[in-house]
Image (cartoon, rainbow, N blue to C red; front, side, top):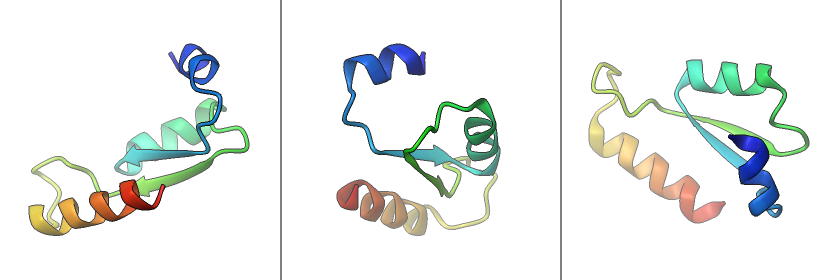
Length: 65
């Protein structure tokens, strides 16, 4: 429920999406507004990027934003 989330946390400026599908659907939903939306590597084990690389990318982005 992004409406409720944004009402409770109006300072959200960046949204991280877990993979390409989540990113595509979120942008299409219209909830992005003026917020920055970043497509992150999927945390799914089916995604071929090694876990350590995914973890490093997520940590970096979470620390930055």
